[in-house]
Length: 149
Image 1 (spheres, helix red, strand yellow):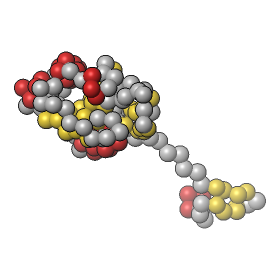
Image 2 (cartoon, helix red, strand yellow):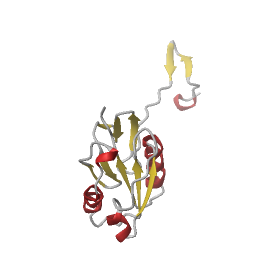
Image 3 (cartoon, helix red, strand yellow):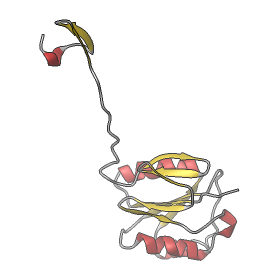
């Protein structure tokens, strides 16, 4: 029996061979992937953020200077469009916190002028949906509102 054909744990010549498997995290080809989240944080590629952020698949994570849903202004969504640059995003996944809330259309006019869709959902659903769309190669952005009590 050759070394490569031994079962996971086998005795051979007085030695015990145990198979080992080392796992490597795959970040979908170095794209920004949500790797964890909790009530007041998100991990992107294992880096923790405890404030609101904008996440795009291929550019650095950007702090989003909004502290609460009620504090949202059109300028926050203008900043999202500016941060997207020439990435050609088609849809923004808007994580609104612990519960689903919808931004008034007057707040998101910068997106609609550029024909960018916006899908509001709770924080956890937004993280999962972003990962799926990003892995499919969609031109997506994630706007996560992390509110502090």
